[in-house]
Image (cartoon, rainbow over all chains, first blue to last red; front, side, top):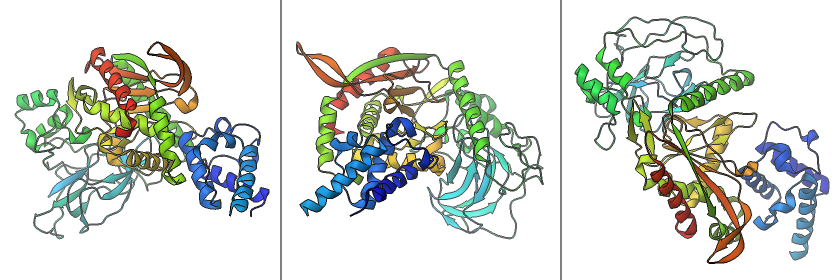
Length: 88
Length: 410
């Protein structure tokens, strides 16, 4: 189980991999990532893939909107991790 | 022995700076191998070779700015005698140091690089020479055998300038600006250079191409239902994006509309050999580049998806290949992610058409007398009226719609 802070780092690492020019410290946790960081659907898919590679968490396509902001993405991953552990 | 020349990596390119060689004299190469890296004003491009053989002499040195068509190296073709290392071919003409035609970055001047006049290899496509109509007329007038001319246009097409160059073999060698050690320009210069390149190309497009514009709304419910269903069964890494469906639909539709797939060169239309979709990729920090997805009409959706991911990654990392830069036959731009409804595109010369997509939005939509809510995308076509008419353009948009109504066939 990763802590919330560790999951936050996973998301930020995935974002900076796709958009190397962004300053992680400057990400506003409650603003939509797509607008804030100028990432498109291809970038977003790469973020989802990177999160999966790091954590093993499968994010179904219908849940993409639940990861719109950094705050929401971290909350989603915390919950997904708990759900996966309960299901295992 | 034939010459390996600086390819044209886009209509806006006059010359390129050789950054590095990946081969040395005596190396065996085969068609498609990456042999050098060249800096255009837009990007660093990996240059492929288009024949099998053995590298003879490396004529251009790293740091040299070489015009399109200028000789980079000599190549011993497969089946020819082994290269003789003792006597490198002497340059036919004396080196002519001149100023670079369009300097993009200040480079210190050192010694000139000699350039041999092209000894012409045959450029053929399926046994047929690709020649612009004007080039053919000029060749007749100047009594030039087209089979002996090196084409520098898209797909190695022979242009008027190539014929004129071949007709005057004793003329001074192509101008080569001497340059210092190859150093890629810093990011700020790259930004400026790319802006200038886009400015020149787009200004030329709007100056020369009589654009006509069409638009059509397309119901994507079938395509997206199919896509979401398909993605349920797919691992994260194998998921498809709607843009893959749109690209596939365009590629398959344009395969049946040859007058919209190709180039306008020297006052005439030259059809593309295959459907090579230029995929507009916006670069972080500004600018864009539209490398080719080759033979996209024959690719599966998975292959298109993988191809686009690869192109986007390499475009942003500056690792595109020469063939991808030189030969898109039609460009597709998708600004849907940016929330726009539709795009009135500007055609990339010498191409003759550009297809644009806006955002997919839920809209009220009437079908069979019933009103429903459907995901709708507005597809647009910017067409070159010299090469095609609105009638043909309209048929293309209709064909794209038809393709998207049968997503399982894409």
